[in-house]
Image 1 (cartoon, rainbow, N blue to C red):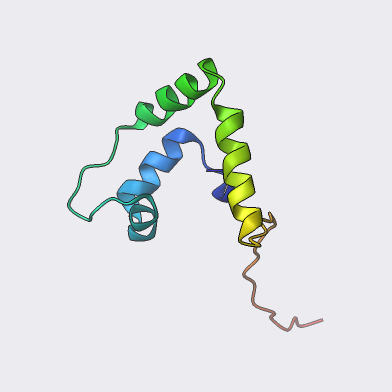
Image 2 (cartoon, rainbow, N blue to C red):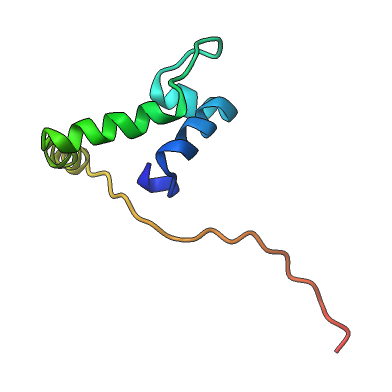
Length: 85
């Protein structure tokens, strides 16, 4: 999942850990999620059949049609503390 800079294995871990990820992917709270390597195998099958680019292009067109802009960046949570000097 590019937006969160997650590997396939890390995505599986987040699905087990976060309700927001489960909702986004359509899993009920009590529903089992795919095991870690399922995402790896799925990505490999998409690539082997040259469907990964088609999927990406279709998704990009759908996002553009809804004026959704995907951006990357860094979020920093910091507190400014006065120093003695």
